[in-house]
Structures are given as structure tokens and as C-alpha cells.
Image 1 (cartoon, rainbow, N blue to C red):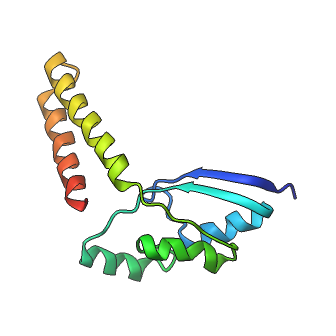
Image 2: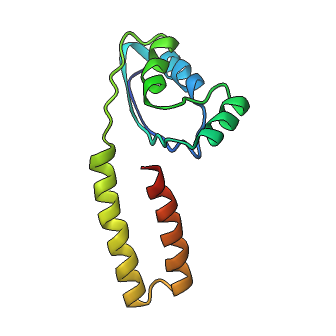
Image 3: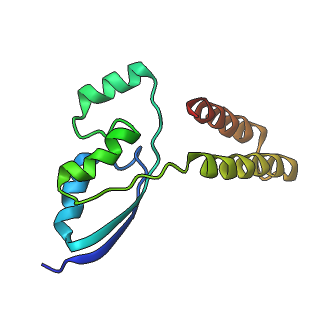
Length: 128
């Protein structure tokens, strides 16, 4: 089997929920000393959502602290976790607000589309 020296992964947890088993598989395909660079979104779920999720999926990584431990538990020699929420969220909010305003003003977004995206944006903002 050909093994990798670096594995770069951009994940979206809502789509890809491999969680802890992902780290075991990443370790398997990396050469000894290889690196895993991972970018992911960690939402802080409401308490009831977290309880349901935990019951449904033992693989689910339940937040930043557990996320940092998961690679170590899978066998990685070290793990570094960097929270860049503020930097990412700030840029995202600036761009989504401009997108919505420009889209509505130019007619590229109908009022109904604008309202739907705006409602989604507000739900996401509640998490942060």
C-alpha cells in the first residue's frame, strides 16, 4: 500500500461524520511521522441536541477538548488544536451580510431567498 507523508482534509461535520474512526483511518494511510492537517467546523450544540447525538453516534467528537484528544487516542504521537473561530466568523459575517445586501439590491436574490438565507444565518449566529 502506498502511504502518504501529508494528508490535508477540509471537513464539514454536517456532511462527513466519521469522527473518531476518521483519525484511525488517517493514521493508517500516513507514513510514520506523516502529518494530518485538518480544518473543521465545531458547533457548540444545544444540550438536548448533544445528548441525542451522543446516543446515536459513538463516533461523534463532542467539542474542542475531545477533538484534541481523538487523534491521540487513535495513536498519533502528538496533536495541536487551534481555535480560529473569531478570525473565521468575523470574515464570514462580513461577507454574508454584503452578499445578502448586494443580492437583494441587484435583484440576484428574491426577497424569499434573502429571507431564507437570513433566517439560516441568524440560527447559525446563535451558536457562536
